[in-house]
Image 1 (tube, rainbow, N blue to C red):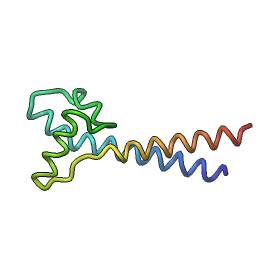
Image 2 (cartoon, rainbow, N blue to C red):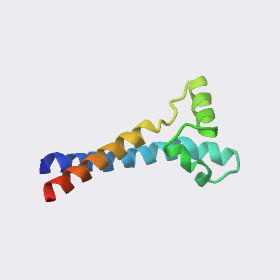
Image 3 (spheres, rainbow, N blue to C red):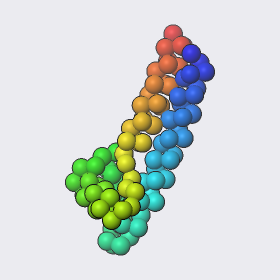
Image 4 (cartoon, helix red, strand yellow):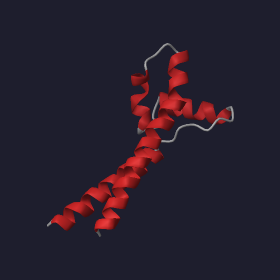
Length: 91
């Protein structure tokens, strides 16, 4: 169980890094062209509500691959599972 917990933690960290990198590379040009700050798109890391969904749909419409928060949520799930498995093992 220790190996599984560690694998989930490592996978979660790697997926989280990939999600943040993908989010940054997708939203940085958009907010730059709009004269906004990247922090204005911060909630787009984990949701497609509001302007995040608009940017996502517009990107798909023009044939670009938009950022998807599903990777962020998969990373969060893997991290949480790894943490819970380690905690269960420690008892």
